[in-house]
Image (tube, rainbow, N blue to C red; front, side, top):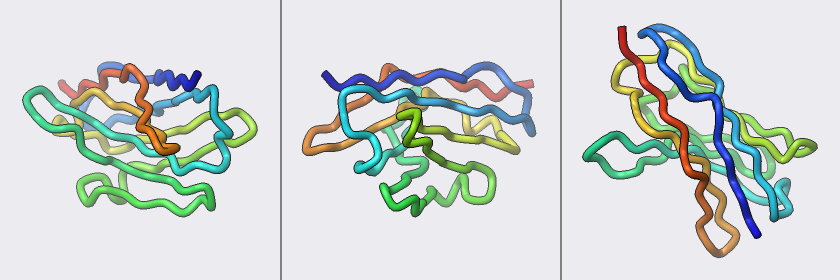
Length: 114
């Protein structure tokens, strides 16, 4: 059974930082690309960042230079370091893996507000 569990969200002031984590169970973590998505109220779920099994990364234009995706294959854990946070980054953040089927975690709320 594939399970993804995110953590690390919370309330932060504009300009602040958060680090999200996603622990993955039930798959051979190291061979799959992993992604972070986010969904704000009334909006679609959008891709934030992706990291391939090779370690190569790609980012949405809105977060380039501020967010960093990384992975620890020994710990089956995906990370998202978020710096210089803006109110428009407020959303529920989800991690994702696709092994022929899309798996999602329950999400973690990130709120950027003064």
